[in-house]
Image (cartoon, rainbow, N blue to C red; front, side):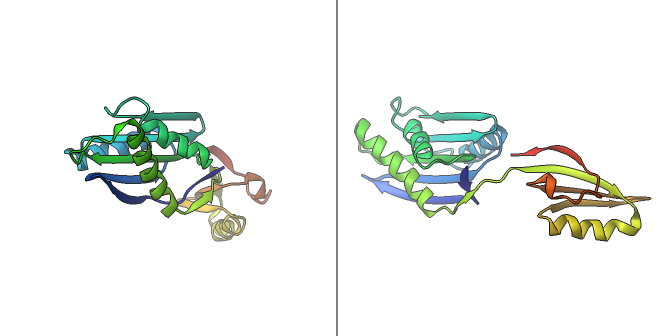
Length: 190
């Protein structure tokens, strides 16, 4: 599965209407709601804020025309994501009306081109699902265990020292963790 690696933005002007496009890598519907709320707060004077997104796990596809004629904004954005086979991506387009109506066909082209433009500037990467794990080891073996986890593709997220060392980490392939390191898988980080 393919996704984008970071936040991207772009702009397009058509017949004095301004289209500001934003692309976000996402992991949940909560992410989407936070980004959309942020856009609504930043661009409270915008005419429309339309969007489309696809999540991989659970599989969710949603879009909104935000008052534009039905099927002229959110759906073209969503279709572009499908065509490019991208998942865990939110595309939002903020429109400022320029005084001239574009018609249904013009709106579809405008929203599609705006979304395409921001995606063309994005770095597309392969999505790798990470598992959140933890392990407890003796104080004497804490540093060695940390190095072994990192050497096998793990990313350390926290280390807590007490009478033992508790290491929390993320890793794509749990089977790559050496067998002498006993770890507990907490969840999948999608």
